[in-house]
Image: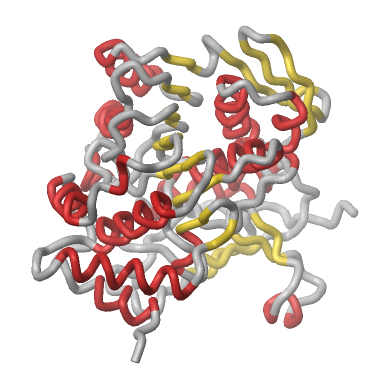
Length: 387
């Protein structure tokens, strides 16, 4: 009997005693046993950063596909099914192919320890190497320097989106330390596009790029992107683009769009492709309004929005998005891990939210069971419908 991918994935969770254990040794060992598929990938664009990686990748993919290119994409985590992590030439990986690849990786790994993310990343590389495409977009899982995706020696381009505090237990407790881990994806001589950064973060990234001889294309220096009278303006050394605002909601998406546009411009893509990138990108659970499904059916008169943010910078982006919406009474239903900065996450949302409903996460051993007292101030005035 053929096992389903879900059964194999569940078994993979037991191959290492830790969920996160950052090193490249295990993934390099398994890739060698598999014939080093990471050396046979279509040209790679590697993306690291604290926030905005997925949105930036989605916009780059939309822009490349607008010109007829076939694009592989690797993202994590998934929202509903693991298959979402591996997109082959524009389509999610099929169940038969995923099952076969996972089984192949388990067999090649044998009895050796390996984390879930490491072995599934190896499966993704196998899929990418065996499927024809023009590009491979790799999103870092955690950090960069020791992330399982950081085994490609010569990507075509690297991108570092905004860096802020998150995963301090693994990456360091300062923005400078975390930026150093993200900058670990910079390769010798390979251009690096850098999104908006704090001064301390940018200094670390610039130093790494200089050490590696990597040309740097930094926000505020080599390119600019901003909103102007309901439009988005992008400018680099090749000129100015006047484009619609991104279809992904929120002012922070203008910054993400800027990095994506810089990548497309660097690759010689047209203005038409750049417009498609910002108007047709799709990235679920990033300020996504739910328009159908059982929850919408239960509460047809209520707007339901979904967002997967889990750090203070992500909360600030959600708060800025809410602040630009017509004022109305807003309630937040939130479940978080006890490893996160819950107070830091909720603080930016306070002025925009009337009430918080804190919930635990079923089946998660690190779910936050007891929420701290987040604020003592009175709730904001209710938002009233603006349309």
